[in-house]
Image: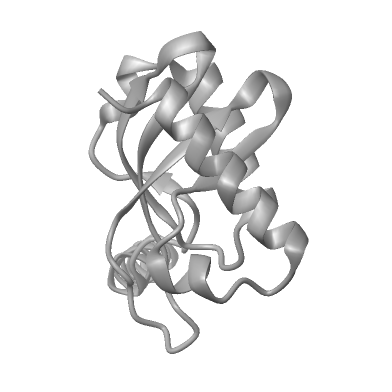
Length: 133
C-alpha cells in the first residue's frame, strides 16, 4: 500500500512538473487553421519551415490554400534577442520544397548577398502569383 502511494505521489509530481514546464518549443500551427489544408500538407509545410528558418519555435497561423497548389499563411518567429517579431506572410509550395517569408523593407534594402536578394524577389513573386487576393 505504501509503495502504491509513493508511486502516485511521484506520478503527480511528474505531471505537475510537465505542466509547469509548458510545451516544448517547436514549429506549430497555433490557430487550428491546419484543418483547412489537411494533416499531410501541414506536416510537409512544418518540415520546410524547420529546414528553412533558424530557431525551433515559429508560430504558424492563417493557413489557406493558394493558387497552383501553394500554401499561404502567416508565420511569427523569434529574433536573435528572443522576442517574437510579429506575424509575416509566407508562401510555400510543398510539392517543390519551396518556402519563403515575405521580406520587409530593411531586408530588401540591405540583402546579405545577391543570392539572398534573388531569393527574396522570388518569394515576393510567388506570393503575388499564389496568395495575393
